[in-house]
Image (cartoon, rainbow, N blue to C red; front, top):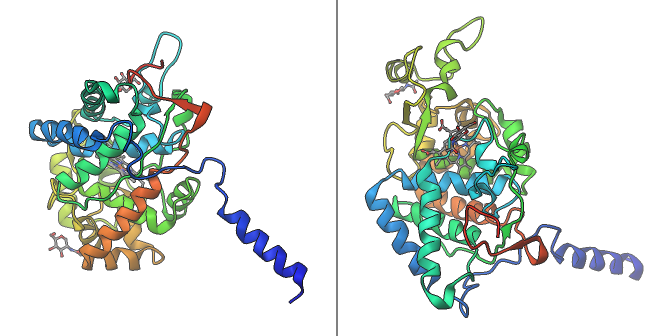
Amino acid sequence: MGNHRMALIVLTLALCQFPQPGDAQLQQNYYANTCPNVENIVREVVTKKFKQTFVTVPAVLRLFFHDCFVNGCDASVIVASTADNTAEKDHPDNLSLAGDGFDTVIKAKAAVDAVSQCRNKVSCADILAIATRDVVALSGGPSYEVELGRLDGLSSTAASVTGNLPQPEFNLDQLTAMFGKNGLSQEDMIALSAAHTLGFSHCGKFAKRIYSFSQQSSVDPTLNQSYVVQLQSMCPKVVDSRIAIDMDPITPRTFDNQYYKNLQHGMGLFTSDQVLFTDPRSKPAVNFWAASPSAFQRAFVSAITKLGRVGVKTGSDGNIRQDCAIFN
Ligand code: HEM
Ligand SMILES: *[C@@H]1O[C@H](CO)[C@@H](O)[C@H](O)[C@H]1NC(C)=O
Ligand SMILES: *[C@@H]1O[C@H](CO)[C@@H](O)[C@H](O)[C@H]1NC(C)=O
């Protein structure tokens, strides 16, 4: 091999090591000097909130996901709308994000800022990342070292939500493309989807699958028949739009691999869940993680760590918000 060709290969490899635009400079123990106790302070608030209401768990986890997929993990989802700006959280197809997620971050931020050394030193985005790790662990999932060093974003608009969140009707290619756009692999997507082992869905998100699926069949044939009966009784055709049901009917309050076992039995609530089992490209991962809780946990930790790196703000692209809901 010629020296030039060799040099070119070495150069190419070296360039690949450079951070890509938007790549995070995150690290564990980022606050070791500025607020060394931050993780304990946040954990205490999250634990207290968890004891008050279990909804804290799914609410925080979903908030983190939506924050990261819209404009990066920068707490832009927490910003409240003002007279002249409709924020992310008020997008009309607005995520139905549960208020307890926002409340958890606001309370944890207050607890952190009550320590004088820490005041205005820790970003809301990092507090959300720590709280997410804590709710997963509190509900029986794996714990992991959380990477920190995100700044809070300077913009939050409802318009930025459009087209950036996966929809429950998505097929595998659409899911893979949307996660790919955020630097996450299909495997990461399948692992992160297991978050639906917790939390609630409003009936309208899957009503089509049990009442008006297609011309040929009113019910989605990939759904388990006895599950359909259950869903139809909890979600009648005419239903209060506030009614929400457990997404994992077997262990709704445990962060476990039951999600994958449900898919094997035709009990994925959304098309985007069930397709992971019906599509032969993702089925092997579903079967593997249904059989191995420890392999699932490893994959989830890896995937949520990557999720936490999406679109991280540094330098002049962000700041430390004093009030998580209001720009400084
Ligand atoms: C793969 C594509 C995904 C789609 C299409 C999707 C869609 C949805 C929908 C439609 C709901 C129900 C919302 C409602 O009716 O209130 C929901 C709930 C939820 N999602 Fe996802 N999601 C996806 C991935 C994720 C990921 C990656 C996470 C987190 C890592 C996540 C976490 C949650 C949680 C925890 C809930 C329950 C929220 C609560 O109980 O308040 N989802 N999702
Ligand atoms: C969602 O958006 C609607 C308006 O589109 C608003 O009335 C509602 O308060 C929002 N919900 C949350 C949790 O922000
Ligand atoms: C449907 O669900 C029931 C109850 O979970 C289960 O026993 C049965 O095996 C499932 N059927 C199929 C086809 O997976």
